Image (cartoon, rainbow, N blue to C red; front, top):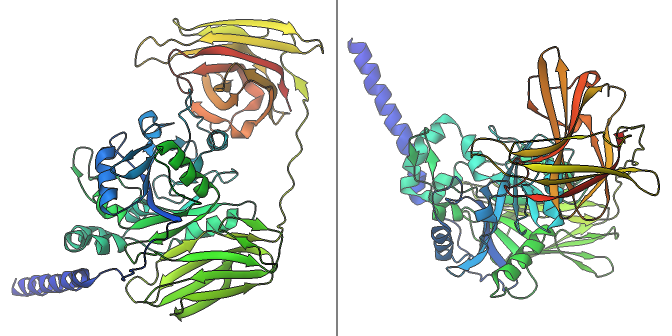
Amino acid sequence: MKKLKKWIKYGSLALIIFFVVALLPAFFYHPEINTYPLPSHYKKGVYHLHSNFSDGKGTIEEITRSASQLNLDFVILTDHGNPNILSSSSTSWLNDVLLIGGSELSLNSGHLATAGYPVPGYILPPEPQQAIDEINHYRGISFISHPFDDKIPWTDWDIKNFTGIEVFNSYSCARKTGLFKLLIFPFRYLINQKYALLKTLFYPEKNIKKWDSVNKEGEYFAIYACDAHAILPITKKIKLHFPSYKSMFEIFHTYVKIDGKLSKDSHISASIIISALKKGQFFNVVEAIAPANGFETQFITSNGNIMEMGEKTNSTSGKIILKLPFNFKTNIVVKKNGRFFNQILKNRKKYREIKVSEPGVYRTEIFLSQKTFNHIPWIITNPYFIGERRRKPLPKSPSIKKILMNQKDFFSLESNPLSTGIINSRKSEEGEWITSFKYELKKESQKKDFWAAMARRNQFNFSSYNGFIFQARSAYRTGFWVEFRTRDQNLESWYRHSFVTDKSWSKYQIPFDKFHLIEGSEKKPNLSKIDSIFISINNAIAYPGARGTLELKNIGLY
């Protein structure tokens, strides 16, 4: 018994000493001092945050007030929804801060943070490429959220034409923090908020490798994401109201380079910021390590042309310019195609040139040359795309192997009791069957689905084909579903994929392997046992009261 008490005594003492040693640095940590003013052609802000429009604690008034206290120029709101109408339509000047509305979309393959687009009159599709295409149609930005998160990772890397990747996401980093760091985090936070939050960060190697990988085929940009909620859920009922918005806004900053000044019109100003982000003309900073005011980078080609971040040139030689007006030492690492190209350790010079003589994707990571957080990329710039790169040839558009709609009454109408629809078919001058589907959606209650569909209930064997192919147009831009169902004895599985139409005829080809299981247990469809196909619109892609006309022709298989 005495030995046990002795071990408890020494164990408790060791634990106290361990905690003191772990907490002691928090009392003394402070960011490096940078008194250089922010140049007028840069605007500083934070990206990816949640308000009480979804799962955040604060109002947009509280959020912009916190940002104003830190002299931020803008904040980008990304509340959950497809889209979140309140968040996406909230663009305004509040507390002298530009609030840019957006949404974090929940898609089949993960989360996509978007901003800078008008709220469409329909629900955005759940398929990632379709959602990205819609955001691009409205000239917005789209960043893949927390791509390798433990809880909600991104799973579809066949996509293209998105804006970029969150190489840092503070919320995701916190979830990957070890048990000891989680236990000690509240104590560190009480002592020094910046230090506590910085201790949850690590070099995001997996995210950065994926960013470098996708840049082999396109031009994509990196961004640091606050992912601020001002709330920490412990259980469904217990929630802690920290870290605060202000403390989160002190961690990551996005420095956006613009041409001229922001306007008093919030929508014009938002379009200026969004345009710069879409072109990659920004760099990312861990502001809690040090402000990066005065940092500048450009690429000057061998014939004297000046390039900004995100731009590309056919020239294969030149030099990367770095302006570093800091009174502390930095470690500069230049990467080419994701691999080490050059480095300057313990740099104190205010100006550096790095010569380039070969084509490639060049970018810079800058670290502080101090012991505490020298493993965290203080600054990450967006790339310069130097020289021509080999790209995969675009696949040829397939031809129809089998026509499905080959008669006047191929489809019949199905809908919930209050929704209505009319189906008409006619032959064009070219002899093509054109089907017109006029619909109006009405819901019966909050809990019940509402829909209208063109249905064909028949036995099909699609095992010799790759997918659906057809042409479609509608009176205004909106989304629809292509759906098929398989049956094996009494077990039925439903598979669905969206398509978005506009006033002009467009061609659609949808592979069977891109369809998403929405009901049933058969993850991979048995294409030899299809018992029905549908072209539909419902509450998963349209709002109550939606009405319009969809026209289709040349519906077949390829």
